[in-house]
Length: 172
Image (cartoon, rainbow, N blue to C red; front, side, top):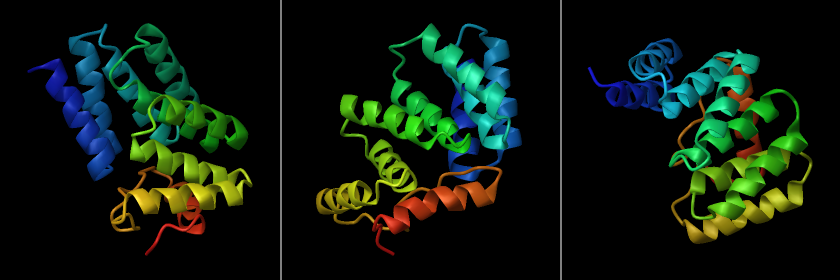
């Protein structure tokens, strides 16, 4: 089977289904089939930290980013790195990291939503509310049902992150 199809399966299981164990099997299979495939390496790191293994996830993701700085998925990888900082309680670093990505690719709504939530959690409530108001102005159909959930094995952390979006003004 194809290493790339295993990467796609890992992304689907991770992002859409929230089945981290199956996602990890696919990501590791992709990496075993092509050890130089940095997207698979990054995905293994992403899954590991979503499972709660923050150190291993951070290390693998950092190495993947360093190996291919122009990776087409680099904005996602950097967003995930910002989320690792947030998970580790380093909220200001998380805001700085995601803000840099939003400056480089302002069209990516998911990154803007993460920035908005992290700003709220960093105590920048006014900035977060302004960001959310602007996003709603640009994307009239933006609401809680339209936002794909952020999936973590730790449901309390996922809910804590999501609170930032709701408190910043994400409509029901």
